[in-house]
Length: 335
Ligand code: MN
Ligand code: MN
Image 1 (tube, rainbow, N blue to C red):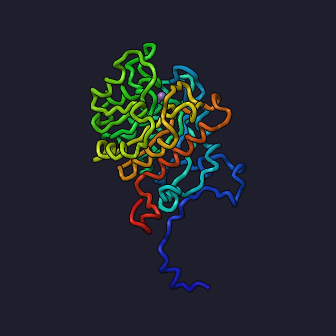
Image 2 (cartoon, helix red, strand yellow):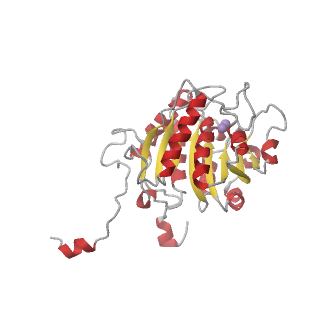
Image 3 (cartoon, helix red, strand yellow):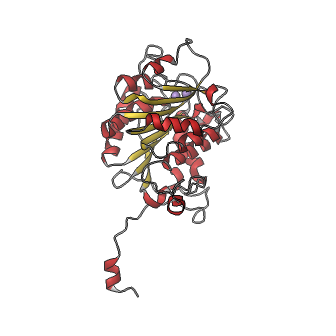
């Protein structure tokens, strides 16, 4: 029987949410939340929240990313809590939950932008960081508006086949081909601390990517990534984008369609899943303040593989957020 003294001495410990284990409920059963975490109605008390944005009304070609969050959650059921490569163990130290989806207005894109920004303002006000399940890439603009208000001017790691820096598309300023032009114009990022990785394909003009370069961005075209490890690149990226808060925006079409066919604007000659892991793991040590994984369009990949890749990349983002205390660092002094 525990003595009174012992109870009094015990430090009040915060009970951290854990993903529902595969030995408690079969992985194909139970509620389909992100990583089988508890769903939370509010961000109060959370360090990190997964948020879905089922929006694809900003897409220019094949739609379907509105179904992204739900399928990413479904495919995330196989992800276990520990990162076997980096030994990150986010659920040991961070309070994490699934905050559900943002109730966007699917008939009104500009109104949806305002809804998203407001929702993120509220989440971030609780001191909770967000990892977002997209949704097409339009959503990164209102998210970053809120993130900028909370954390200040941002550095950016943007992985994509496309630069997404058009001024307008079909005369419209807000869509999935323009967010990074808007983000620069609004002063949300420090151009010198921005990198775009994986850009490729055919352009509207031969100097399409040069606008980014003129803003101070480092642009790493896909061809520069072929046939090699991106770990050395990430050593340089950390140098470039560090020194302040950093956000990662990962468009699944940055990967080759062989790995991620379920997306709206596929381009051949893309990154591998191994390179995606190197990029995200290479963000470890930066002051990461959030991330998103966008453009998963389930109708174009009935196998579910694209969403599976997306779910795993979101887990990898979780594993590089500050506050992770990798078990290896206790044992081996680093990772
Ligand atoms: Mn994009
Ligand atoms: Mn893209």
